[in-house]
Amino acid sequence: MRIFLLGSTGRTGGHILDVALARGHGVTAFVRSPGKLTARAGLTIVAGDPKDPQALAEALPGHDAVLSALGAPPREALRPSTLMTDFARSTVRAMQEAGVQRLGIVSAAVLFPEEGLFYAFFRWLLQHHARDLQRMEDEVTHTRLGWTIARPPRLVSSTEDTCRVATGALPPGGRVASFRATATFLVDAIERGRHLREIVGLAR
Image (cartoon, rainbow, N blue to C red; front, side, top):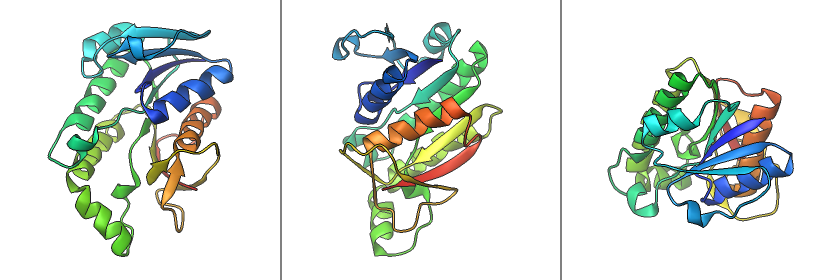
């Protein structure tokens, strides 16, 4: 399988890259800063801006799926922003132009209507980011693409590569998930054709 990866220099994206290459997939990493990646067997590095739909569309043909682990830097997450929406809009437009149908994308569990002070606090803290993520998801779900949206809670570093999953909900008691497990979930989903057009909650 040939995977087109967005966000490969981030923590989740780095794990997606590792998992996909270890399984023998070819990966094209589309990045603004190619110098942050090291050449590896099976990896093609393409320089470009993920908000540029034309550059994306030119690089996409011949790929079987797009995996996006693009995220907002902390300063963007705490103030009004359209960054994630802009990323999604460009990705969707490019995929439609290039004829690539399969998409796996990372969102966040803050969009689930969980009860309790813990979840209420994070919804308040991340209210601007949540609005941007919801619009991002809308850009994806209002298409005919074969999308899968992963909504993990707070992501942590760990070697664990499995997690509990629930369609349309956060697994009970879920407060964290690992970067590695989130990456593995997305690679599994596109490999096995699972969770098509589903929003999936992930948790340790």
